[in-house]
Image (cartoon, rainbow, N blue to C red; front, side, top):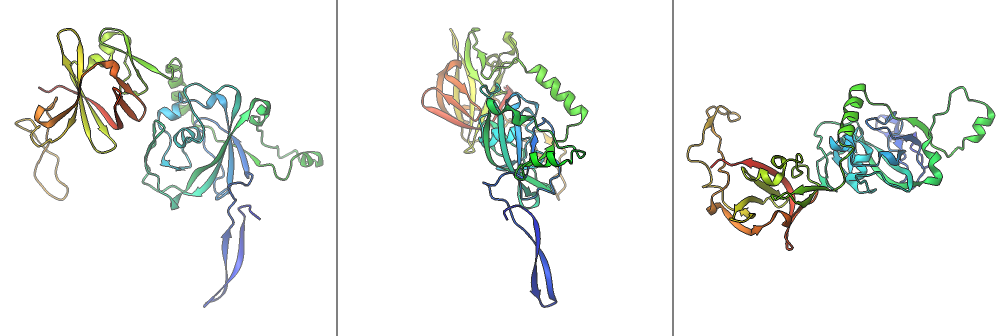
Length: 359
């Protein structure tokens, strides 16, 4: 059959007839062998039993939100194939298999996610940025891994599918056996997280329950200007000193792109208002300060000191190529993985950093 059962078959060798184990993998279209209800911070049990088989994880609609402790802490390792302790909602967001937004979805009871249990030692788990979420990389060994096979919404008319209860061992009567179909998956229970994890998760949700999907930033004159969903650009508070635009009075913003390029954003002080200049970093050979300080960090395999270069902030004009000038704060839009400048310039993000002025 298609079920992932272990079987043996004879093999002729020089040492005589022997046997070898053969694993028959379930197809992606097969019904799952087990089903369990999602629990934030929990883990999937009995992974060794379901190796190369399909499991169904049913997630209530209340848990389908970006505003979760697991997504905020980036509790997922891998790209496409993830370690078995990765959060399934974070995986849904990262893979784009189901839309996960700031607010929980309405009109559905939840979502059914079918995953395949894989041998983790056969796969690698690199980091990648997808759908505004940066997964973590894992270079060590992982015994098991998971991969999403398919996902479907659970309509409100089938909300009873979320009431998964494992069958009691005592209920062995003939009637109870007749009620349970042979094709129905075995009901499992996701292990609960420890108390410390639940404590910090609850505290995080309480602190962020009023955060909306779109965060607006103030301009220098106190008007709502920039829509941002980047944590690095969000205003830290409602007072002027906490606005990101005012942070640029004493610092410079450096933007790295996916092409290995770097841009510098700094203010241009005019008589009437504050505008900004966006310049591409060209050559950094001459941008160091005059007297770099030596550090005690040793070279690997060698002795002596290493000259730690310190960058001049902002950079000299000879190290820059001005791309945009006379920009207002309203001309910048900060998206999860890119920055839009005006109407004709888009930068794919790799990193973003504020650096204090040194000159």
